[in-house]
Length: 163
Picture (spheres, rainbow, N blue to C red):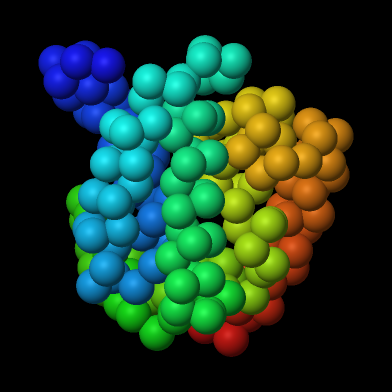
């Protein structure tokens, strides 16, 4: 892939890759890890066979890289004690508590449920594309998403009941 084409692809893929990384690694390392992923995508671009969408392929590479990041550090989860990143907030006094509540709810969900919510609802991947990234069947994605929504709703109600 020549650099002009990759520049265009970079513009399309970077937001999804960055969001995925930002939710999973400490804020201080988000940019470095994202840059490593984008470099990995660039190096692997010759092997993209077009069997899936480019976004699905890139998120699969991203998920593997984040898993390696934690294996190298012998950790299984990201620390969640950091301040949330708020962009475009109209009233920070209202959005900060809500963002913290959402962060707490996601912290209490299993990683695969957070991932399925991110891929299906935030990134807009199909069940088939999500299944490819997560290495499960589309039926498993649908079932997991159903459970994730139920668990999120239940945890959200508990989290916001105390506010």
